[in-house]
Length: 185
Image (cartoon, rainbow, N blue to C red; front, side, top):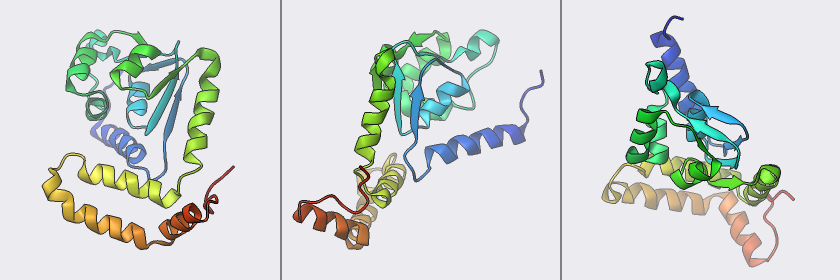
């Protein structure tokens, strides 16, 4: 089997970055095996919920390869120490360990996975779409910069959001003790 071309690598990277930086919330619902590229997709999701019996692995080293395409996303997700262990051993692990490692946010009993995902969706339905997009943008803008370099950006962003119609509606709804217009039941 031929190795992926530079063009293929670029396409894979572009796809992972697009998911990672999407303005919408990306939820990974994991039930079964998340191996290699599937593992990478979890790493670019905003929220990941898996069943206890889900399995995870980066087996590339057992095949004479390395998880190069997904490496920056895995390292961002689980940290350098855990990434080193997972990259170098290729070992398989389950949902509870995935939660402990920070790969997923919640590990649900096998028969409660859909309930857990629905619960998370319930929280998200209460949130303003524009504020979600702004929060994601802020995360990527400030995540690897010293706070002193981002103070102006953060101050301007807060002022911009505060003046937006969505924030005005949210504050009115809070004061009037009613759901905001964007809330979905």
